[in-house]
Amino acid sequence: MALSFQKYQGLGNDFVVIEAKSLMDPDRARRLCDRRRGIGADGVLTLLPPKAPGAVAFMHVYNSDGSVAAMCGNGVRCVARHLADARGLDGEIDVETAAGLRRCTIHRGRRGAVESISVAMGPARDEGEQAFAVGSELLRARRISMGNPHAVIFGDASVERATAIGPTIEAGVPGGVNVGFAATGLDGLDLVVWERGAGLTEACGTGACAAAAAAVKLGLVDPVREVEVRLPGGPLRITVARDLSSVLMRGPAERVFTGETEL
Ligand SMILES: N[C@H](CCC[C@H](N)C(=O)O)C(=O)O
Image 1: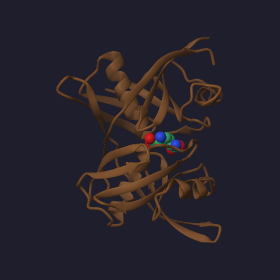
Image 2 (image 1 turned 30 degrees about the vertical axis):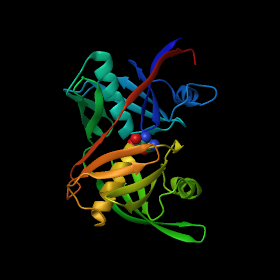
Image 3 (image 1 turned 180 degrees about the vertical axis):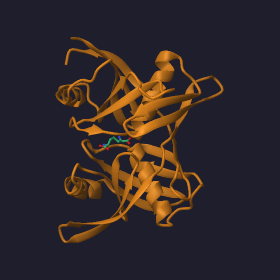
Image 4 (image 1 turned 90 degrees about the vertical axis):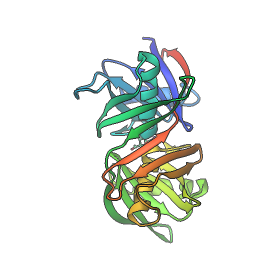
């Protein structure tokens, strides 16, 4: 049966967005995400009818390996953009997720074009320090939950290090974990994320929030002031409350194409 979809991306973290009444199986999600035999994406976002009052839709998240995530930061910006484009919504849009309701705000320029989207990402839950033995190294990570699990390691924010170490740490946590490699830089953070269920991505919204929250917790950046988190795909602007009780993320989300598939 033909499936209509929209392809969206936020800083190169890309998704197949589908509106449906029921969920596809993980095998189909994997096929859709295959970059040679399918559409190609880091994940599939299925918009289902919401349960929460005031929510416009429920966002279900499949990673490209078919695993399920409770939350996706770049994904929720893409969903808000899709809802604004497809249903003519504007201003504030509440998207329901398995991690709770996420209020999205559409920011338009003078000519009315969408310039960026802000998302109230809820609290960052500090889960303390966790040490990982990788080869001869003992790596200290800060465990932060944004509704999905993150391990943030400060030091070398390089693709090489994320690729070399990320898979071992992801596999070392029951249920998996997203692994952020962060470095404090001029007026912000540099970050590369090895994502649970997707591997190395161009950007990770919840990862940027987790890294900024860990940096505030560890006193590496000032709270309350907006922090630029620079990812390989581009920057996200993150604001973390002093007690981590609220995290605001702002960044772009663009539609790439619309299509139909028999996959
Ligand atoms: N891989 C993540 C889900 C996608 C998160 C990421 N794409 C974002 O923008 O937050 C997980 O399994 O928790």
